[in-house]
Length: 87
Image 1 (tube, rainbow, N blue to C red):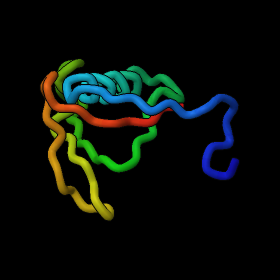
Image 2 (image 1 turned 180 degrees about the horizontal axis):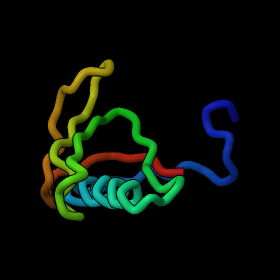
Image 3 (image 1 turned 90 degrees about the horizontal axis):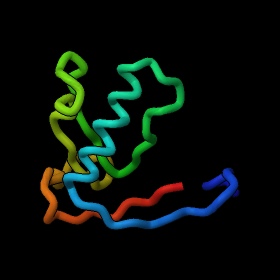
Image 4 (image 1 turned 30 degrees about the vertical axis):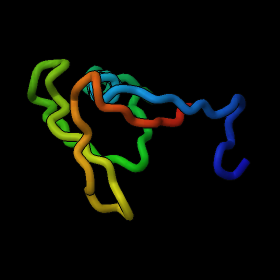
């Protein structure tokens, strides 16, 4: 309960780099639109966005973290695969 104090379970999924970038773009779009609570909480990765750019082009860089430091860039293509956990 301390790690996941919500109703429902956790779901593990494998997504493409293209999908992961799209999820982050959608999250950034929700912030730009002023929507409360829409921004994704992420862990194990870092990303950089430029809010001055048009929607769909704001996320500029995504990297996986190891011990809090950037280690692997997330490729924005349909072939690369990444495991995510959703609640």
